Length: 217
Image (cartoon, rainbow, N blue to C red; front, side, top):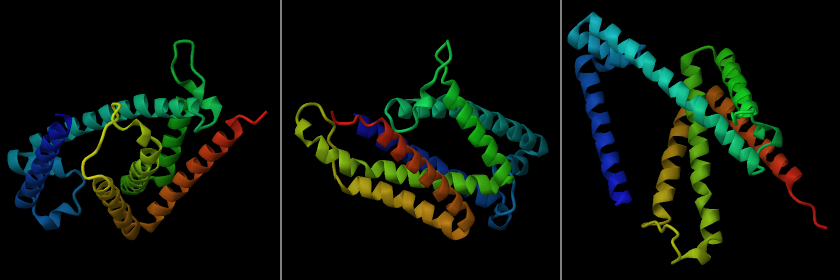
């Protein structure tokens, strides 16, 4: 049931995405898309007038704020969980009296501010963020090739089995590597920034795990 729902959801999303892009090309024109700051607002303005474009721009701004709110709620807690699993330094596990992840939230906010001031333009931020996300998604998916053999003894005891394994994980990894490679070709500096951040956190994680590993008696 769940795989069928996922497949149906993906089909709907892909269809809507393709139809929206078809509308962009048909209404705005392919040549004008490259220099547009807000394609959706430009489409609304071209179809329904300037007021519609301004209204959609405001809605997009509110949508971005909503995403920022989600990011501020989830990402610090991921850092907290990684700290509790010894994947990051222990100080990130500090909480306030009410249980808020103060240390992780402070670090995440500081990193976001550094990224904003260092990049300065939206395109640069988007490129290295997408590159970093793509590398992170690909490497996260690749862990299945390590975890699957380690949990093979649980077969038949409730562990989830994937059809077409290992083809589907390989397709997923290849898709994200393709995105990362495309960004690297278009903006090598963004790729270097993303690799630097990825390598830094990987090194921190390895050091934190080595320091918190119990020593043999």
